[in-house]
Amino acid sequence: MQSNTDIEGGCFCGAVRYRAISAPIGSMVCHCQTCRQVSGAPAVPWVTFMKGHFAFVTGQPETLHSSQNVVRTFCSNCGTPLSYTSTAFPDEVDITTCTLDEPNAYPPTHHSWTSHRLSWTRIDDGLPRYIRSKQDGEEE
Ligand SMILES: [Zn+2]
Ligand SMILES: [Zn+2]
Image (tube, rainbow, N blue to C red; front, side, top):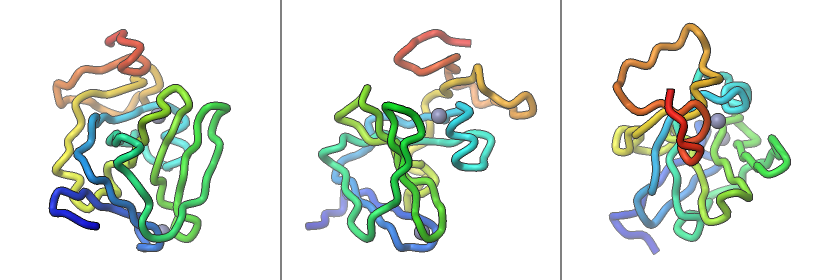
């Protein structure tokens, strides 16, 4: 079943595709060291979907336990980082914004983990900057 409200995306090579049936409930840029290392990028933008409204529809990504409570996935063929789930937020799945077919449609609303931010990255978008997570609440 597909409707025109569906949001789709996938990895670089096309082996893994996903679909969400409702809009993201969050959108942010993460500067944490783990996101940086697993992606090879200075920061990683994420959108958050309700887990029940999201599914991989083509292929299945490889999983990586990046910490005790966190599972990340990536395409085993092309390596694209795809998802993040944490037992702390069991109803949510974070998806790398840049794997959406339309990443411009869901711009970030804040930056997280700026305490890990690389010294040579610049943030000049005026968005709130959280030292750790937004849930933690402490701003830069
Ligand atoms: Zn791939
Ligand atoms: Zn992160």
